Length: 218
Image 1 (cartoon, one colour):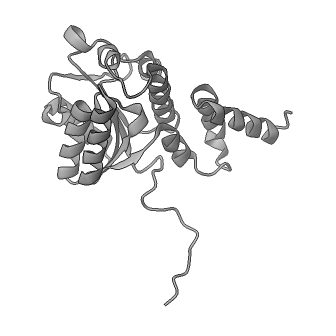
Image 2 (cartoon, helix red, strand yellow; image 1 turned 135 degrees about the horizontal axis):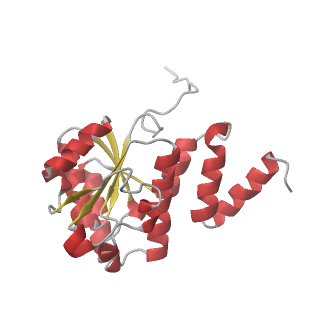
Image 3 (cartoon, rainbow, N blue to C red; image 1 turned 120 degrees about the vertical axis):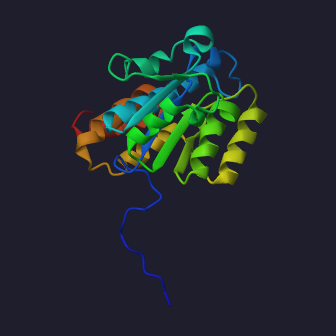
């Protein structure tokens, strides 16, 4: 029997209604010893996630570890988009956030069975809750270039381990464009263009050109 193609959204694709975003430990002291990605690229990719989540109204959970006595404040790219005065961060002492009840209450408040994670460090504070979430039946995506570790090997081994357990890897720009998906979605076209121009390097230049062409500016 010949299979016939049908124009339809893929069930494995992310959209603004089918997932929640969890940002873990994007803090100064954690970034200081992150070596697999440059700090500028890391911060830009985290900014893409935060701004995308805010613009597309994604339920978002932000958690920190030992903020007051070790790891310090979150990146300004996060706090500028999600001020703690408006959205309290869940601070914890456990490297596996899934072992903290306040964090679990925050996860349940998202109301989503599909979760997108990013965090520092990949092998510890990201891997732990990802493994726990998978064990409890959640569908998990990991943003590999908005996460990092003390060495390239530590990062890559953790990514492989999470993939072997069932997590699905994506990148920050991948996340933004998967939510936009159709350039006829005018309500978020400007948002997607703006985020791309600010944080997505050469791709942002192309988006600017396309945006100008659509709006009659040459």
